[in-house]
Figure 1 (cartoon, rainbow, N blue to C red):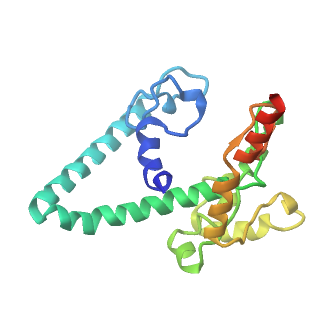
Figure 2 (figure 1 turned 180 degrees about the horizontal axis):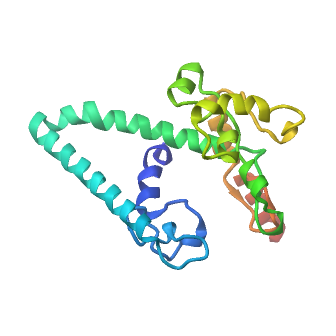
Length: 219
């Protein structure tokens, strides 16, 4: 549960669980000079991007100031009830949805010669959280494959695009959709998908039991 609640702040502050290529570098989303914002093939952050981060930081800290002021005005318990608890719920859904979009026993990870843009984009799965949540979230969960392939497409076209992508003559078996109930899918992913081997260019999820077996083989 700690992963669901605290992953997002850790990711924004220190790129927690982010790509390993940023380790040892300035990797905070709040730093205007972070390596996260360097353009491909360039060593520095574009001035326009740097100022966008500065403006975003200003808005963030202004919001923090507003929360502190509200707590002092109406009381800490009131802010916990009206702000902090809803924030935890939103954060839980945000991390839960992102996690289940990209993690399951049948999703492969590619690197080296095996990686292509198409393979990377299709390493995700569509899941429905029920009609109410799907509609409330603008169908980001049940049309996520389309989002990966066409990230600039307006969300209101995603449902129609998904219908086309699912056709046998378009993506066919390369389109992933999972109708497993969300609690069961979360349990399966968390239990099974614990690590990948650092060998080869096509990586599969492994379990703690797999690790124990490999350790026995090396003894």
